Amino acid sequence: MARRDSQGWLFVLPAVIWLLAVNVGPAVYMVGHSFFAPRYSEERGASVRRWVGLENYRRFFAEDQLVHSIWFTVGVAVVSVAAELALGLLFAVMAWRATAFGIRLWRGLFAVPMLMAPVAVAYLATTVFAHEVGVINGLLHRLLGVPFESLPRWRSDRFWATLAVILVEVWQWTPFCFIVFLAALAAQPEDLREAALVDGAGEWQVFWHVTLPCLRPVLLTVLLLRLIEALKLFDVPYGLTRGGPGTWTQTYSMWIKEVAFTRYDMGLASAMSTMLLLALTALGIAVLPLLRKQLAISEEP
Amino acid sequence: MGSGARRRLLANVFLAAVVFIWIILPGVWTICQSLKEPRDVHTLRWIPWLEYEPTFAAWRENLGDPQLLRTLGNSVLVASATTVLVLVVGTPAAYGLARFRLPPFTSRDTLLFFLSQRFLPPVVVAVPLAVAVQSVGLYDNVVGLIVAHTAFFLPLGVLIARGAFLDIPRDLEEAALVDGCTRVQMFVRVVLPLALPGIAATALVTFGFSWNEFVAALLLTQYRAQTLPLFVAGSEDTWGLDMARVAVRGLIAVAPPLIVGLLVQRFVVRGLVMGAVKG
Image (cartoon, rainbow over all chains, first blue to last red; front, side, top):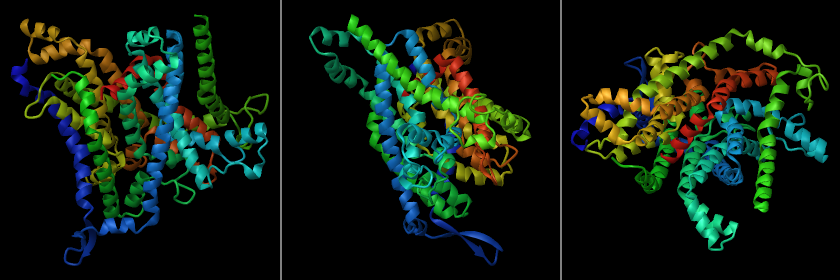
């Protein structure tokens, strides 16, 4: 089979071309565009592009709310992904020892959040987080007797609005971690565990020294996948908080859209896109050894 | 193993409690909200008939809304077309990656190209795409959205399908070639049928992701080509957010992937796990 290997390109090329044309092309265009600004040209009677160097980048850093969105986006991503991994692992370990029927049942029920459209989840969550009349505040008031004045203000307080975004993210994506971890646990070689148990290790020791190290590659992959997705966060704050209070929960991706289509400032939007691409490329290069190792496990033709 | 049984029971009780709080409670609450009149929406009442008089007004209002039918139709069209395109373009690519060395690169490096696409933020691609589709007259047209969605979800589809092809023994393919099949015949008649479960998983996951996608739909459409997530996002009117309306629209938007996902759980889980772990 190895003789006619370049034939493989016949199979792969259409997909590569599609991705280059629709994904890579526009992204590269944005990078190039970030060094230009429009200017009205008298002779042509239309606006033309003018080279402005790093001016668009300078304008980004001059605007505090844009710089804030970097910290907000990264912070929300780190906190929510950490919580998703921890909870997903806890639930998976719990479900792992269940019967086959139990596993199917828990997995099926837990799959619900991640099958839902994130923006729909965000809009539905508005009634859960509403002040005084939402489910959470209602229960806090009724069951715990928290007075109305001191109930969390999910929409108008910076801290609580941030927490609401994180909670919705964690609600939706913990199940993804759960399902992948559960599959990885089920695929683990049982004899290794049994050998450790026979040698007199306690359940907890076995989990810590045998099960968890076996899960490491899967944990790292899920961490990476979730982190990438969380850094692109858009739908949830869009539906839940509208980026408010003020622009506090406006994520970086939401700003790119707003700058491009509300301010019609393509130069600034391209500069922001370029910086996001640079950051994600850096992340990609940092995890390249991990990815290569992961791929080496699966078969190489 | 008395203690083992007890521990299993405890774990199951714990999971039942988690599922109740995490899934059942919000689900029931949303359904309750959808049956409320405006004056009941801002109350903590749960049980219809007992605590409040249920009304189907919000359901009637939204099911009779022509924009619902339009967005529903667009969602079906966009997600189906995206799925077909991802399968037509993606499964051969997955096969090529699983079976060929692809000089001058290695197939692993080519695979890394596909993986790298998952780093691309949708908004970075969708902003220039929106400008591009405007200039070619495809703004607010499902075709533009389908082209974008196919590019967005092709990498994941290729990964899942590649996993399915890797599981097929090569001897079968060689036997087919020895028996006089051409490569294309062998791919269509021998490999594809064997990879069918993996391809079904690819199709379901792609359909779900395309159905739920919001950023590109927001930037590439305005009215005629809007999909269901945008119908949900358009729940706001001059009076603010009508909670019953949000509940009804949200439920309609999430129902199809939920029902399909729960009916064929095995394939969906397989697809998601493969896309995560083998990638």
